[in-house]
Length: 66
Image: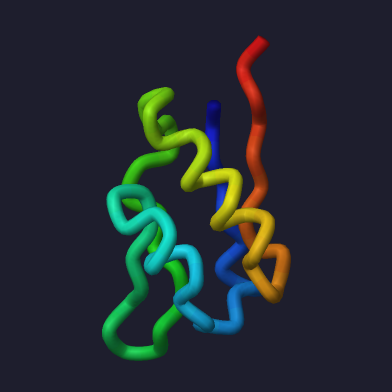
């Protein structure tokens, strides 16, 4: 799985950080998402999918590896 974020879409809700803190963080100055791990290991896939699903701005894009 590869993860991408669109910082321009991010509204700083922080839901992704709550669900997958090993993969996402927020900038201190404005709360915009920071992608910590663009290729997370398989045990984190479920949390990353949930983070993408609940993102209110649809700022997280997932590319599943075949």
